[in-house]
Length: 83
Image 1 (cartoon, rainbow, N blue to C red):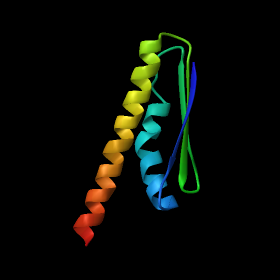
Image 2: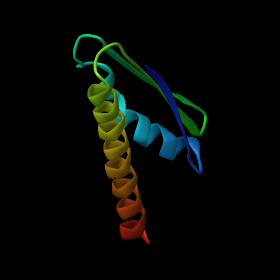
Image 3: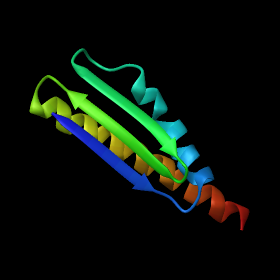
Image 4: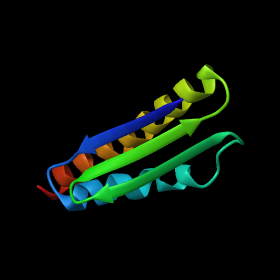
């Protein structure tokens, strides 16, 4: 199973913040699973390849999107506190 998830942001700074937040997910993964996240301008591209169970694949996508949501909420809160 393979997935490519593309997320677009207002600018490269926001994209970099989110990409940096989820990058640790690229390192420690179970056997049979690969995750690679890169930033291309204001777009983040994450490729997931899973050679194990569907549940692992779905949980990986869910975990990634949860991490993205936390990062987005963090920079939104930081932006509001600067206003």
